[in-house]
Image (cartoon, rainbow, N blue to C red):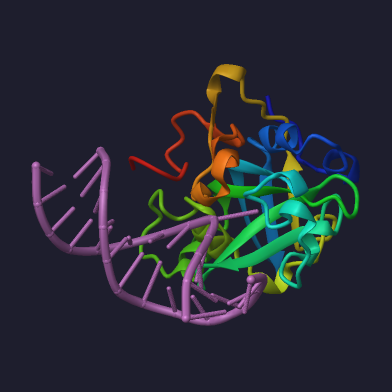
Length: 205
DNA sequence: CGACCGATCGTCT
DNA sequence: GACGATCGGTCGA
C-alpha cells in the first residue's frame, strides 16, 4: 500500500488541531540529508504540545524567550532545543505563525542510513535503542540545535508520506512522558505510539 | 521488573 | 542557583 513518497507541504502543518497532526505524523517518514548523506526513519511515537494553554509547553501562558522563539515560527518550522544539558529534542511546529503549537518526534523505526546513525551515536550495533526516544533520535539523524529555526521545506530536513496508514487499533494513546511538573496537563492524552513497535520509548525493550 | 541516580550544561529566575 | 519535553546504568526484590 505504499506509493512514491511525497514531501508533506505547508498545508499539512498549517492546521489548528496539533493533537490531530501528532496522530497523523505516525507512519510518516522523517528524512535528513546533510552533504548528500541521507538518513530516514518511520515515525512511531509523537507528542503534541498545545501552545499557550498547555502547562507542559515552553510557550505556556504566552511565555516567549530566546530559546522558545522558533516555537512561534509557524507551520513547518523546525524547533530543536537542548534538554538536560546534552540531548537535542526535535519538534515540528504547526498552525499559523505566532501560535506556538509543536509536535515532539519521540521515536523512529530506522530505514535509510543506518550506518551513518551508528557512526553518529557511536553505537557498535543497530539495536532498538538507535532511534528510541527523542534524544537518541536526534543524535542518530544528525539533527542538533544548529538546525532550529529552519523549515521542513528544504532539502536538509523534511517529512514524507509514502501512503502507509495505521489502523485505529494499531495506535495507542497515552499521557506524555517526563512532564509531571505540568500538573493537570500532565494527564492529557497527547502521546501517540504505534502499538507493539520496539522503537517506542519507555518500558520494556 | 521497578525505583533510583549520575551525567551535564543551557536557560531562566 | 535550580531545573529540565533524557538516557543508561545499577541495585534490590
